[in-house]
Amino acid sequence: MSQNEPKIPQATAKRLPLYYRFIQSLHSSGKQRVSSAELSEAVKVDSATIRRDFSYFGALGKKGYGYNVQYLLDFFRKTLNQDEITNVALVGVGHLGTAFVNYNFLKNNNTHIVVGFDADETKVGTTMSGVPIHHVDEMEQIMKQNKIDVAILTVPSAYAQPVADDLVRFGIKGILNFTPARLTVPDTVRVHHIDLSIELQSLIYFMQHYPSAEGVHQ
Amino acid sequence: MSQNEPKIPQATAKRLPLYYRFIQSLHSSGKQRVSSAELSEAVKVDSATIRRDFSYFGALGKKGYGYNVQYLLDFFRKTLNQDEITNVALVGVGHLGTAFVNYNFLKNNNTHIVVGFDADETKVGTTMSGVPIHHVDEMEQIMKQNKIDVAILTVPSAYAQPVADDLVRFGIKGILNFTPARLTVPDTVRVHHIDLSIELQSLIYFMQHYPSAEGVHQ
DNA sequence: GTGCTTATGTGAATTCGTTTACAATCAAGG
DNA sequence: CCTTGATTGTAAACGAATTCACATAAGCAC
Image (cartoon, rainbow over all chains, first blue to last red; front, side, top):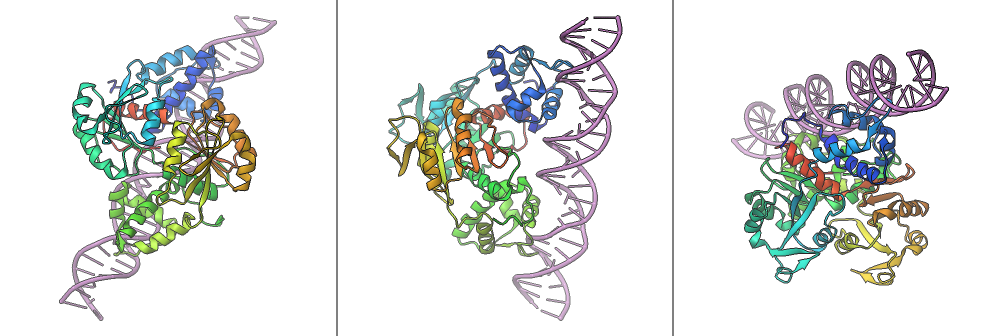
């Protein structure tokens, strides 16, 4: 879909959902217009970077005025494909997986965990926050039925690669990987790593070696 | 501590814990030497980048040979200050916070959640996986007693900024922020954001707009 | 209309990070 | 001790991202 748009820098693409969220909150608070300076203050991104980011999509604002909130909102909704709900599978319903099912990315979000998988028979057949938990052996069938192409991976790290291999085989297109394993997948599959120990470790390293300055995040 | 080392690029610093973890696993599997090519395969970072990263610390390897695992291990342990345990506070013991307490970054890690805080009276006074949960009103006293300077923030987003203000007042030096709020803190305090909805959203954006290519993470 | 103020959009400069490519060096084996 | 093969460490090239700085255009007040 929309493969003919100009290629957006990856750094920009990562900030789009952040912008979108704040624009939503502006909109629901009734604000009509906003400047890159205000946005900057709220999302903690330099205002020039915001203007540059927006400019990749053409001229979204007006000189001397700023940006119209409604227009931005509509634009980002379209760009981020927010009218279509993305079904997500959760693979591994341990502590972390459970937290995600309960949270379920509900607010201001077009993503929804629709099914969980686990190998633990005591969990299989239950429902958590309305999400049915199936056995991992049923993945193929259920993933294809529900047209799921994104998975959140929260299995023990020893199983990460084999489970990822399965997911790939069943047609997954994106994996949000919370295990420490660095997955090997075909390059048609997009993997984002969130490695909690490493985030904590690197935070501490930065604290000890970089007295000041703002941190990025991942 | 060790403020006189050469300044390491931030991108490099973020990879250090990743290297360390893999070197540990090499060591415990009895491997004596390792090349940048092998490391590259395992951690999925280009081998030239690894050599460049290591070179910021001087010559850690030998030409034609590679790196001595024991030497690397010792070096990284020292550099990442792994002999000293870092006490961490968990603020907000909801679903996500609970997952972290149970996980507790135990393996191969010098960080340890030693205390949790919550406003919910039914949680206060309990112990989760050996970690005592106190009321947020006791933060000041307990944080200072235990010399805690890192916190994991998993409170509802409306409380994120006020709680962060408290933490700053009680002398925190680093915050791992899992709330969607972009915190305002003095620049002596390091904040890393992990915004789960945004990670999921941006994964989906990348899937739809960048057919191939390897994703970064964070 | 006219002029003042504001804030965008972007060329250019800069900073940061990655990758190429190869000379220098070492281990190992005969 | 010499040769071969392997692998580092880094200079230089490249590429990505950020930031500066300002011409340009729009709103707004009078």
